[in-house]
Length: 222
Image (cartoon, rainbow, N blue to C red):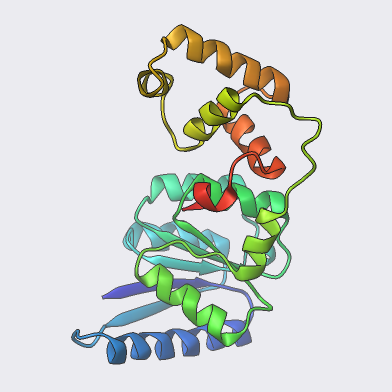
């Protein structure tokens, strides 16, 4: 059973998404050797209903129009941490690049779909999320791949390698072991990276490096 919660204040949007979901699941059935997939769509139109719905359905796909509801990015992250098996499709037409980066890089449970997407993109997004994969619309990928000038950021080759390792979630001890260095040496490199990027922690350093193109965004994204 695939459970889907649809939070959108516009009736026409909800009806359109339901139609596409039904066609997508029918297509999956035809293309794979599997029994008919059962699915249930719960429609809600108010943010206050969301927590209760997720409590009753902790393993679900949540589709919501972020810009039409009173939910912040912080609220979404808290929800994802509270309900780690929920997969989110943020469906909107006015999302900032910083918001998009934050959602995609915070958790692979978040997928981004723009309202100007064509039927093929919407269908592919739903398909990928059903298969528990993260999806970002092509236009979104193009946005986050845009590289800011990096002349003002001067990291050594070693510092760049360490920053890339940090972006993969490796600890200081793990990086030191891989590089046959001491933990103290890696800590010194980390401090130099933070100083050069003018940041206070690893998360800020990674975001800065992504924006500047020091880290390959698609490598980190995958």
